[in-house]
Amino acid sequence: MPNKIKDFLEEVAGEKAPGPTPTFSVLHILRTLELVAEKPIGRGRLAEELKVGQGAVRTIIKRLKNAGLLSTSKMGCRLTSKGTKLWGEYRKIFSEKVEIERNKLIDANYNFAILAKNCGNKIKSGIEQRDAAVKIGAKGAAAIIFKEGRFIIPSVSIDAAKDFPNLTEHLIKIFKPKENDVIVIGGAGTPQMAEYGAMAATWTLLDDC
Image 1: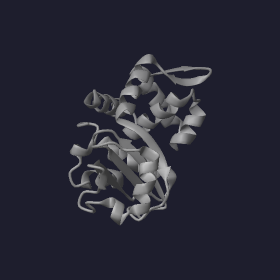
Image 2: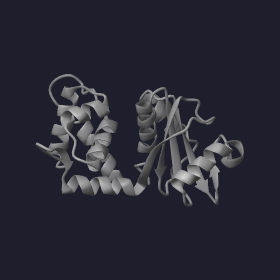
Image 3: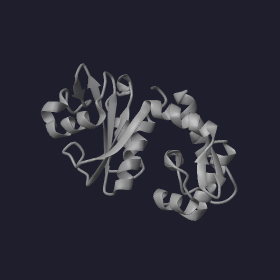
C-alpha cells in the first residue's frame, strides 16, 4: 500500500494539463489531505494555509475531486471514503508531526519533526533525506533512528543521547518511539518551510516502509 500511496499522489500532483506549470507539488497535495482530514475547509482558508494562489487551490481541489479523494459543498472541502482510507494508510506510517524547539542538530530558526513507524532499516546515510529537504527550499533535514533503546544519527552520532541530550529527551517525550522507528527533523527559516522540509524528507521513505 505505501508504494501505491506515493505513486497515486504523485500522479495526481503531476497530472498534465494545458496551461502553465502548476505552482504546487505533491507536498501541497499531501498537506491538503491533512487539513481536510481535520475538518471541512473552504477554498480561501486552504489557500491561506498552503500559501498558494487561488488558481493553484482550484487546481488542487479539482485534481483531488477527480481522483475521488475529495468532495465539496457549501461547508467546504471534505474527504470522501476513498480519501479517508488513503489518509488512514498514510498515517499508519507517518503517525505524528509536530513543531519542535530549536536544536544543535539543524541550525535553523524553525524545526518540524515527523515520526516514521518501522522505517529504520530504510535509512542509509541520511543524505537522501537531507537533499530532499534542501531541494524544496529548507535548510536541511536529519533522520534519527531508534535502535536497541538508543537514538542513532547515521554518519553523525552512534548515540545521539550523548551528543544531543536535550533534543533526544524532547523527542522521547513527544513521540515515545519504538524499535526501528525513525524521527525525521526538517529545519528552515520559516515554520511552513520547516514543515515541508520534514515532509519532503519523509516522502523519500514511502517507497520502502
